[in-house]
Length: 268
Image (cartoon, rainbow, N blue to C red; front, side, top):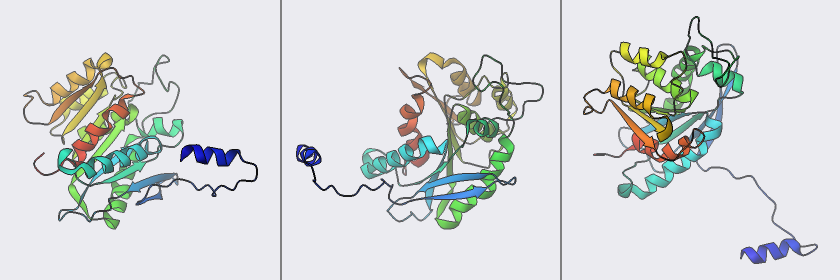
């Protein structure tokens, strides 16, 4: 069939069906605006199956322009496997970060007297906008999803990579009621000279946390997970090593475990 198609292309005057963009079924893009007027693209994919009585679980994915499609398709593939995967249907929501300058600002907490060193990524860019961005998620994005779909409000998870992982951990440690779990992949724990470790030490309680990192950079994330769950038996925090991965590939390697963390079926 493929050979015939290519042959048709090579024949002068052969007609080929008009091309159309690929679209993800059962998905939509909406726009919300921050208080200052900045527009944020919100990408939402929902299951074909009706929601369970308690509603769909929801996975909010940072850097949505990069990770939304693979998260949505992975979630659907695992849900189709049903009992073999242990994953149920859920809603995937991607929040597009936009330009690098905005991403760095939005995904980093305030650090008085500290700036990103010249040797580190994003040096020279403005930081400290995490609270305003989390307000946007909490006051606009979550209500938008809850209004249109039946959502299980006890099963909302936030997933982020790199600076997004930093933000996800910051949300879990400082706004534990905002989401019911976070997945932080290769989080930028160097930011703020140990800011997240200090927040972890001061936290009074957190939702379940999954931290994933490559085996070559595992020391700090593994130590953070141990500090959050010193007994290693209450499920409060867990570290997932990703052997053979680099910073640029850890998100892909962690996607299926993240989906299972967010959308695990009953009894899993």
